[in-house]
Structure formats: C-alpha cells, structure tokens
Length: 346
Ligand SMILES: [Fe+2]
Image 1 (cartoon, rainbow, N blue to C red):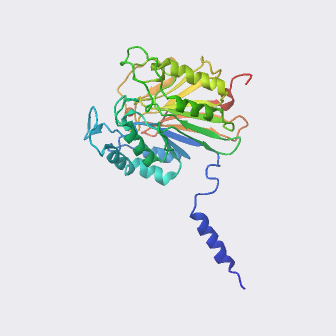
Image 2 (cartoon, helix red, strand yellow):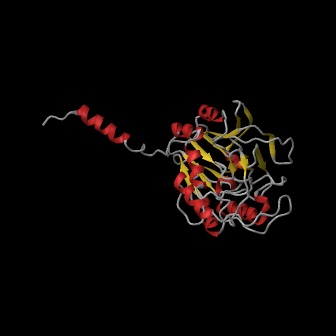
Image 3 (cartoon, rainbow, N blue to C red):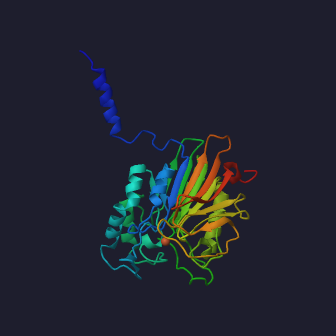
C-alpha cells in the first residue's frame, strides 16, 4: 500500500485548524487591554488605537452598553420586554465587537456595571436582574451561576501566569447610601461570591492577579459609587488578600468616565495597591478637579482604554500601566517591578 504523505500531512493541518490551538492560554500575556462605558451608537476612534496596541486579552469592565440610554436620552428604567435582547444585538454588531473578533476571538472576558446590568446605580433590588443575568451569560459565555456573572481565568504558562478575576458588584449589592451621604454597613458581593473569591485568591500558580471591579476600589473622596461606600466589604476584601497571601494583586476599575491610576501605599495588604481605572470608551467628563491623594500623575477625561504591558523576559518582570487616549497618546503611565507587589517576609 502506498501512503500519500502530502495528503496525510495536509489532512492533519486541516484537522488541527478545526480546533482552537492546543494550549491557547499558554503563551505569556505581554499586552492586556481593558475598557468600560461604551455606547455602541457613538462614533469613536478608540478601536483603531486598541488595534494598534494589539492586546492578547481584552477585558470589559461594565457599562458595555447602556440599557437605559434610548434614542440619545437617559431614561429612569427601560420597560421594553426585549430590552436586553436589543441591547446585546446592538453591541454584537458594533465596531467594538468587529475589532475584537478580528483581533482575538476567545480572548475576551467581561463583567458588568449598572447600565448594562440594567439601571443606573442598581444593586440586588433590581427587579429584572435574573433576566439580565441570563442575557449576559448568553452573550459573553460566563459561567451560568444563579447569583451573578463573576468569573476567573488563568492565562500563560507556569512562572508567567496572569489570573484575571472579574467581580460582580451588582447582583448581590445592598442598597447604596444616598449620593455623597455617608456609608452603608451592607455588602457588595454576597456570601457565595466571597467564598468563590477566597478560593480564587488561594489557588496557587498565579504570578500576577488582576481583580476587575466595575467601580473604583482605592479612590475614596468622590461622591460617586465606590467600594468605600461599603467600608465593611472593602475591609473584608483587604483582609482576604492578607489571609490568602495573594501576591501581585492589581485592581482594574471603570465607571467614572475618566481614567486614572491610583496607588494606596498604606493598607493592610503590606504592598502598594494599584487601582487602574479606565472609563470610558465613548464617555468623557468635563470634571476639572477631583480629590484623590492616591492618584499618580493626572486623571484623563477623554475617551480612553487601559493598557497593561508585562515584560516577562527580565528576571523581575516589569509591569507598565498606560492610559491610552483616542488621539493615540499615552496620557499617563507608570512602571514598577512585579516583586514590588509582595509584602516583605511573605
Ligand atoms: Fe458608565
């Protein structure tokens, strides 16, 4: 019997092409990008800039579309029974998804914020949350859990592993205190998500841990949504990082319609805690000033996305956080060695 080696080889190539590359998550992530606050109907040049950055992973941090923004106007609540179906259809055919699908199919992770959850500043009281959760899971493919859309995934080989943990800060969140008026004793995540988060932070193998939270973790002085509206929950998360001995933690956040890099040097974790905020992809701010003693450099209020570079080739990997503007400039950046994100003695 004669064997046709050319035919056999091309058959294997065709067969391999039919499946995702084996070990697709195994190449080290050197470029990660994220963004939030996106109205698919608005014109923006930001996706051209994302394309130039060429991320190996893209993270959506919420307000991925605005369910309560119809025909150019905000409405208190969207009563359309097909609201979520229509919202995701609009997002699905947007320039954002066209760019991301061509760049990196299967290399997108997502969580939500209030406007794609369904309603401004909404939490666990939101009456369409289960319907919204099902629509989210169907579109993004997150795990189908009964209590929210939180998810986690490891990227890269051993010794160069990035763990991305995306929190759900909506589905179980207690009522928000009135804007600018004090704090709440309530919770942000719900017990099941806390238990899951402890497991994710304890699991060995991660060299860098990116915790995506729709709202800001470090910045405390402004009157808008933030973790410090719920000080008990914020302390609980800080204590959890200490308890699980998690190293290399960086927070990513959105929501604010401005971008900034905050770093809290005085916290129980025992190493500098960065909170890199990027917002929004199509939303900006006329804000001139905002108190944030932990901010590095200036905030940026034009359309933006967040870029994270990791140079794994040096013995102490170098991390660079960059705010990328729609105009192609890097508005602000900061670099530090990964070893900085470990408490002495641990
Ligand atoms: Fe937003």
